Image 1 (spheres, rainbow, N blue to C red):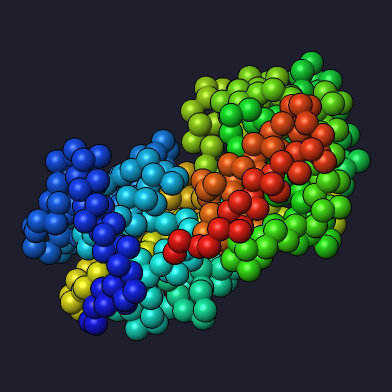
Image 2: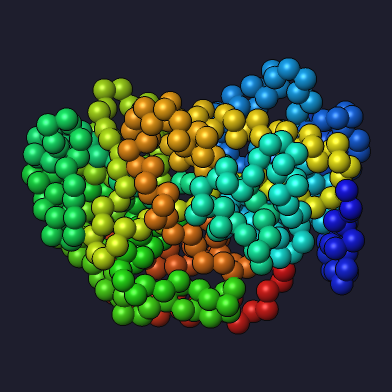
Length: 447
């Protein structure tokens, strides 16, 4: 196959410099023998597939199971897998390794980060010919995720899942509050009146709160909660446009959404001061009827002895269903590859996709349609109960400073948190977020 390095090097003298730094920096920061060969640029065992990911907790445990299944497969090449801290540190390591010409064969990227990697020439295009090497085609994937990963009509990422913001409910609390139907499922909740009525009913049972969501020390969750409700409004525009050069949010809808979020804490229906762990503990211990978070916390909920709970898409409180979310994807870092090396890399990706049911048990909605449409997934509860959320998920707008775990989420989420806590008015919070974001919007993209 043609080398991607020629594309990387053109006009990128700064990167050439960083490339040397990258290898040195990675070697200094990892200090991990399992990475030593690949990162230091020395040869790994011939035929080995190298793979980097950012999965911890329940996701990390499931990924290890999937990697072991790949290794146990008949004729599988050797696998050298490594896990790094997620967020900016992971993407920095992946970028530096690629610039330094020692990337892994396959890496995980959030869909909202893959476009930046593609614009920087750090990942390779995935053509239909490449997919066809292992019997895949674009029609094998959820349409929304597949389209969202495209850049200028080309494919750069293979989606493994969709992971939206969802609503958890404590079944015992909701049953006592009269919120379950005869089958034990949560009755439909619609509109702000329906939502507040449900929270009030649950609050009467818990004696504390109706619903909980993190407000302190977790900017990403504050952003997810806001973005979910903001995008449920007819007329809501993306927060960023022109790949981040323009702040394009709808000011009126933004202020209305912030005011509504604050009203829920002022009324005592939701806590004003709870962190990530505290918000889930409230629901787990019956102090809150509902809990809002990404579906990946299902593993934590399942670990609570005696807890009976369910999960559904976030109810539509305004004009249309929507929920903030992202997708984990497989990308092929840019490097010289022979056809055999590319086939091995794609064979590993195909093996991971074939194990999508294992992955789905951790809460993520499969993007691989043979699994999504399988009877086994349909019978997986409560995971399949919120599968429809993948159709209305809203990805963060593209920019060099946006995406999951990004500077954008940290800036905006911090201000939303202050609104939740009652420490800032919607107007003041928006003004501060805008002021900080303009610094990045007015800065030329380094990509």
